[in-house]
Image 1: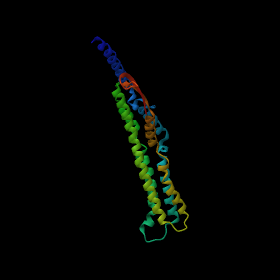
Image 2: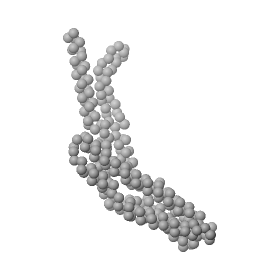
Image 3: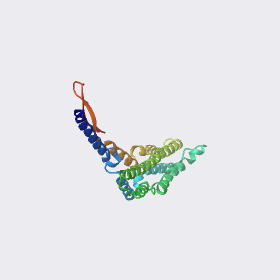
Image 4: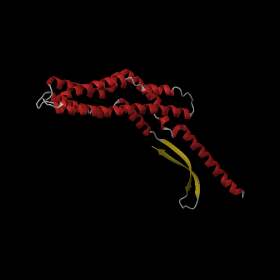
Length: 245
């Protein structure tokens, strides 16, 4: 009877110790890539807010470039004159092209550039002053939400820019003279409308980088287990070790 007790007490002690260590590993933020990623999402907010301030309208170059080319194509078509036709769209095509280009500049300067999703995120996380794991997670996940929000806006603008500039270019192309010199400008405008697809907005890049860094984090996880001997007739306590990607 006493012998059995001596056999079981070390086993129970070992399993308890390993379980405690395993729990400590989980508490060490191995389960929370938000707290292990470098830079942290909160740090990324500070970096990108400063970058937005420094670059100004250059932040939105992938939207402003096709808008500028569309405007120039419309101006070129207006200067040359659309193909003679009774179709009202032919007469208004150059104005539509110029209008789309001008509207994108206006929308960017008045609405998109003044947006401060990063700054708003920083203001929100500054209110979370606790130091517990829960508070730290709340800070980083709130920061990530701000990064995703900015990226979501950039994606919507990308597709709106593409569709509006490409449609304007197609409309202007249908209104040009057969051998008119404005054809070249309109062709360039159609190609330039693809710019947001080729060159990502920095807000999108920021989100992609942050997610990529999180995916690269791995953590060593140790935990208690029971091991069988080669004969399979008895089991012994042991430790399992794994690398999680």
